[in-house]
Image (cartoon, rainbow, N blue to C red; front, side, top):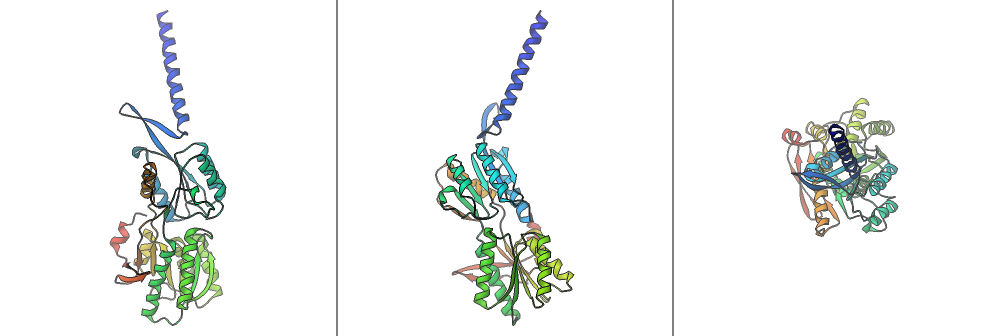
Length: 354
């Protein structure tokens, strides 16, 4: 009899334990995930993050930044969704986050337009939305709490200013430039393209053609190959990220032409990834404008400010540099402000994490 009672008691305890585990697993998808620290119950702040995809080295680094910042050890539960370059997938992910009652929604939008409805849904659910990298164009700016990212127009302005200095120094009589754009409609594409168009008009450059390389090496190779067949006088290529620059360089070489100072065609690029900087050091890329991917720490700062009602600015620009393949640093002026353009060294390349 005692053995039967003991067996029954053990069964009850095990069933209770299984029930507790099951309840805990369900709570993982709730607004705050419960954990235990030193015998006391604690909770994690849940972050739903929708990333554009993994189209470039920069994008991979941006994802790493978020994953490093929002860890359980730091008090967070990060739900990561890859949109694979599809706005429809991002909208589904945001709606999923709303259903899961996350504490914050963070996303990098594929394009600027088309977000009003889903962001209104997040607002009704009282979930703050933080946008990173690219911007959104919405009728009501209160639909999101903050935006963190780069000044893409300024990136382009600085690159074009350095290019103008190079053209003058080398006494190049005519600039015939083509533009391999990023994903059309993305904030980064709009800013960098506009900067080039304004510079071409200001300096009298011949902007021969513009076409999207979709921020990928393969597409840029295809676009550059076509442009070389259509234009035999190209001497500059303005690529809107490093992966596009790599594809363009391969296409130029396959066409029997050379790149870099002293070569047939000069490459302007953006992102300043480790491989991009290495190629700048080796003078394959003339100018490389940094696009800082380390947004995680800034998102965390915004969350802290939101929780303490200390958010005093809706837009936050991350710090960035401009790099050059020539032997010495140079200074440029834009809008009354002086910027240093750094010549790339092996030390700079080795310090770059991505």
